[in-house]
Image (cartoon, rainbow, N blue to C red):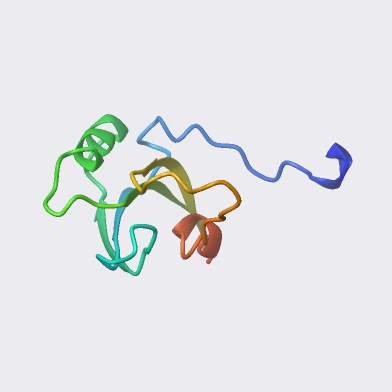
Length: 114
């Protein structure tokens, strides 16, 4: 596929909090018997935290430790709402050669526009 196939439709610097309406953090957990499983998620949102505070909070230790942590910036313009994934911390064990990981649900892949 050539570069001409894609066209830039939007570009934002999500490090500036005045552009972002809120930050979301998703903590993924899964079935104890399957270290790759992602079947449980808890999503937190803050419209007051800065990007640095959000990233620091997302990396804090938890019990049980999440298998995957994703951080999103939520930006609303008019009736259009975007959720932009800005960080991903995957703590699942490495896959064996030839194995593929089911991407599962990700807000970044499912909820791009509303």
